[in-house]
Image (cartoon, rainbow, N blue to C red):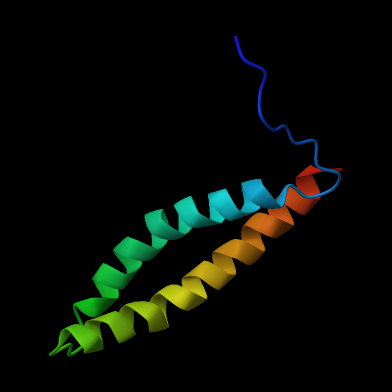
Length: 77
C-alpha cells in the first residue's frame, strides 16, 4: 500500500473542511431557494436568470460560510 501523499493536522479551524461544507450546504440550500424565489420574478432572458441566481445565491453563500466557520471555531474547543 503506497504512503499517503499529503496529510493535514490543522491547528485551529480546518479551512478545507469549512470550504467543502460551505460548498455542499450552499448547493443544498441555495438551489431550492433560488428556484423557489425565481417563480415570482420576471426573468425574460438567460442573462436575467444568471443575474438573479447570483443576486440570491451570493448572500446564501456568505451566510452559510459564516455559519459554518463559526460552527467549526466553536467545535474546536
